[in-house]
Length: 534
Image (tube, helix red, strand yellow):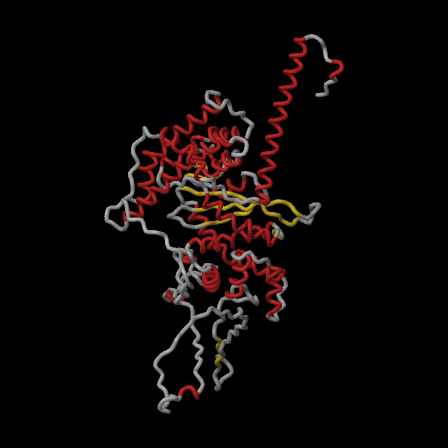
């Protein structure tokens, strides 16, 4: 708005009106500038800043006392049995090397002349040894596995030649053995080493394995392991609660300008009784992907407030369960524009997480005492006694900020703080639903952690070669992630499973899931007449 000072009107009421318009315009500009600064700060933090959302405890302490006083009317929290605090000791010296690592002795003897006693001239006797240990490394080795099939024939006639059966191969008439396939899968989908780098590594061994060949191996390995993947998916869909999240991935598309488009990887994390992590690939972020994956699922779905899930919740068989980590992040992002309210909100949320930590402490303090409460029962009890009153006070506080009854004035709806409060209030039922069942989690961090490997990996392999490559990655990522979830070495697990799955009975394919898997040498021979899985 341009104002010519030389032509200002002399009418006082008109001048007042112009001033009011200028003040409104200035406020609007300040609001827009603040919003843009907030978005710019988020972008810079995402690119260059730390991802941690920690707040100085001394800042939170300013408001934590007020929050504690506000919820004092609730029942007193049961305290864990007091134990004498032991001072934390920092480790000194070298850590002891694992006992299961193989040892190779390298003996160093004294020179022969020093074995003769200088006093009496007799030979000294061996009385002991001093041993020190160092870690040594031998580069990985590649060898050719020769499968020799013996043939027998009768010398007295021309018929009756018999040859030993050929074992089933992971890839029919293929070059790689189970160990080679497991190594390439683990290197890419666990260690994030793209195929073109693996091609260079194999070249140093004198092997010419083009990335196109390695890519073909991955596709055939995924087909081989799909029956096991399908069983893991079915197990996850039997969970009471499933955590899900998604992340974008670039996909090659020769028909597009620039030859790249955006696909989507979705993760689905099963509960403690169905401990598997599976992935799904879709060509877009439409709700069709989750709808097709979940099918007839009945239970809780924990995710962010993505609108694509609304159709799933409308069917009444899937109950919405939101994540407090998402809600907390919005208040954390508002700290630069409204520090006081941000700290108060973070203090409330911190109190909710303290209840979760106390439940774990009480469960751990029980030990293996007979009749001890399960963790879910302790959680449910503490959530009803402590978390529910905190949530009621927190809701009241947020409504005061938006209604203008708070001391600091009304919060503007489109401000960072208004956005955070609006997100919570519009999704309040789904946010507090975790207090109704001790088996439910307060946040969806397990699913976010499961996608971290995808985010790290795509910085290396950059894109999928096709939609089929995305589906291949979903299968192989699922088996690697599920193996890691159970503390298994993905290479050892995959090498054994790839070598056995072709001959494994189809009705017992679930025995190869990570939590039920036992290496082949620990299992009895397969019963005769059982149909293989593949």
